[in-house]
Image 1 (cartoon, rainbow over the protein chains, first blue to last red):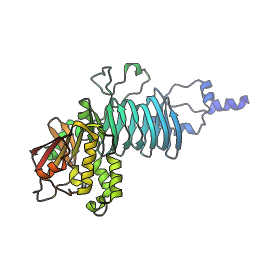
Image 2: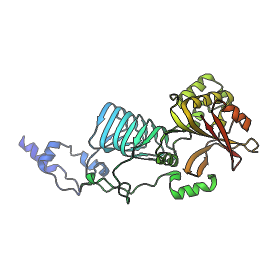
Image 3: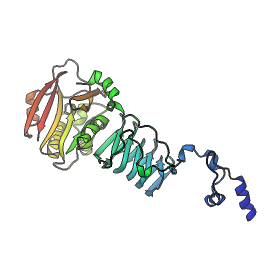
Image 4: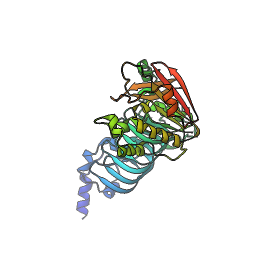
Length: 201
Length: 172
């Protein structure tokens, strides 16, 4: 017995660029060696973890997650990620009420959505349901049918960056955020000016 | 206030309406029209009562008096006579008394039929109209037609604008 444990410790690869974890932690996780090199780097955020439901997964029931989640399969039920981001991938089909901090929709979602921070509905996305959120970005070409209820955040946000994390969330391990994507279509001043040239009345 | 926008979701309209503190219900009426009645004779397909009922259920199934305003844009021009009457009756029912409806109508005398447009509010003074799809209007309306069409409403006001377009503001 002790020999086998020793072997596992010896051959367990250590993540590149991360401080070596304590041996006891590795033993508890029991991660097969072969999965470590193939794990995509973006699936591990510095400040937390991200889970993925692959495109061949069909799930019926309730999902409660304490980490970011990407759904690229089919889900029916409810999804709650109160403090985290949910991404509906291009193959994702979600028929559920969703609560999360942030939502990115590339696939299809049918259900009511309650998001505390921001909803990002991409061009190929289809969202049918009522949404309640602080901010929403809809790309041209996206399909949306439902109510939009913008909930004003009382706490004043920093004026310099729309995606700046709230002070409580700004732990040292918080990953660097990408700059805010410009609002699509006619919402940006330059696009509006360009579009207005032919269609503006 | 709760506003119905039949032009489909657009960032600028959403930002404008919600920026005023209102709620917005977004519905892509033209897309539903194409899905329900496209393929073959667009006008003839609308005469099918089963299709027409399915279309109304999919697009305008709301409780009475649910909305304080409706942005109908130029959608009514793409409806055949029978379906048009039913759509206007539904709009009348789902707007609360005193609510307003904005519709656009092209002048009949245009030489070429206008394309369908995607309309969005750019700012307080500007509506952005972007051509979309291949559908052409089925009906054109003069002022008298419009008054008859909205006869159940409280008032109808016409505003002539550029490009042979009339803005019509209807009070419920």
